Image (cartoon, rainbow, N blue to C red; front, side):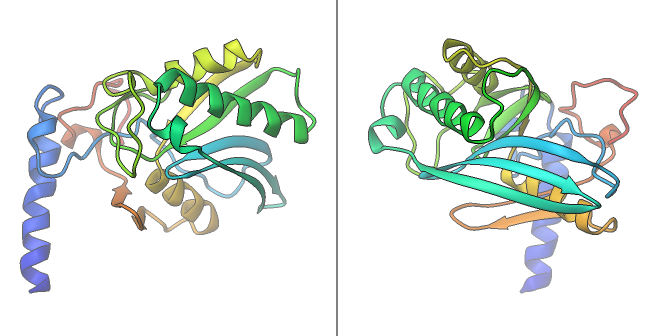
Length: 221
């Protein structure tokens, strides 16, 4: 039975990889590009900030990398039902408010930030590292005016309304985050998998095999 599942998944992988950018939505497995061409190698250092939206909780993350060790701090915010199912603009205003509080607690409020990680764990057609269109809501979310829109632009606009100065936004989903964390801890890590409310996975692939890839031809994976 496992061999049958493995064979069928292999066929679905291939169909997803061969789908063009305008036909990927017909593939049984989407095989969507992440637009990340490298993974950590353990030599990184500094303090990094991110938000994680993938369910009823929104997390603000402050991650320090000290002598090759990750030192994370996180603050959880419960997303009210009226924001999950109300107007999309109000949902992103709520996210910006949480970022504001996170910056205040981290004592960086009022300082320009070079980049903010944005983990958005919903089906997204990503078109760049800082741009992605929401395909559909899942996990109980149904905020209006967001499906088909660029979620990074919606977040950027909300943060600007809140007076936050963030130069760049890095869009990933939770499986990509899992892979990045695993690669930092162990260089041989090449796959990230999430088994939870939803099931998803990511891995390193040569871009020549990804027909929906719209990034630079010089990027190999």
